[in-house]
Image (cartoon, rainbow, N blue to C red; front, side, top):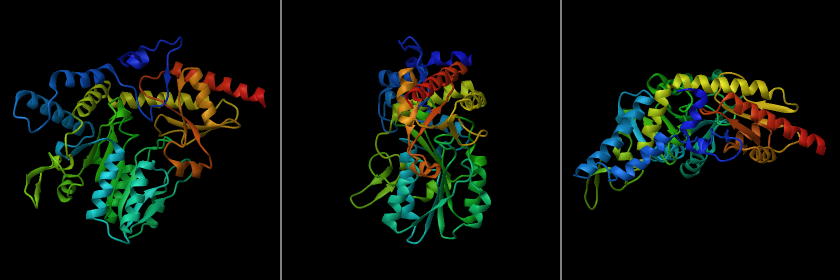
Length: 407
């Protein structure tokens, strides 16, 4: 695979009819889909469409094999030897809501503490706020320092002994910061708390080893790693998945049902009530195949190189401040240009066929910490090249000039 030609695998980028190729720089929100993923989803509906696990005919068996093969690929991708530790969900948001519901019913008691961080996406804040109100538990937050990092010694020294859950992101969707998750999981383990890692911004960018990490739960979304929307995975240690009862009831998640009681299915199926997103799971498996063919080391190298080049070029623009670290980061770069609202920047960039994100990025507490009403965010992925960065910088310089002339 030639990195400069990877965009040819992505029809929305390849088949754009505009004079200038679309520069898609909103990859932290979602990624484009290659032909292999689109074809895998289409082929399922054309050739294998049947419900899984309970269909006693060849078509149903084929569908089940494809679905469970995707589970095995997902387990391998994040390096757990037990594919029964993979629960398919709609993505990180559903995974965290699922865990919040289960833990509130079966672990947390009034007066207990849920520890989060100031860097979290709303999907790792709002579910816990709901649980806190419902169950009388308390929320506490790890503070951000400097360029968006945590002080590990501060976490340990301020640890509340009533903390039962520590839920945190692996990488920031705003600042690009990669957090020391191994150390954070170790703190949680030593303090007797359940660790939950939001891997939405990490799994697409570099290799993940949940066994080495030592987390209790880890979750990610397929659409941020060239997979379909509406599919993701929740990894959970087998011991914990066996221990907790499901949050949702219905078909598939049971072995036996009588009028007054039921016997739950084995893991992971007891957490997958109803007909699952079969096509989505197969598409996720195809996305994993695509990234593994490229290799995650190559993905990491490509994105890191682009981010470093973009940071260098951004530093030359007058009145522009980048938020977040300069190194040890993902390809998500948030910035502020003096005198120009982020929404205006995004709209003018769109006029140059460059797609970026502007706003609070579903992380309003970070905006409050930055003391910004919003930021502009450019986020890079495997189909972006240096020429994309150059066009992006040229457009920003043009926008800077427009507002200079107005003032």
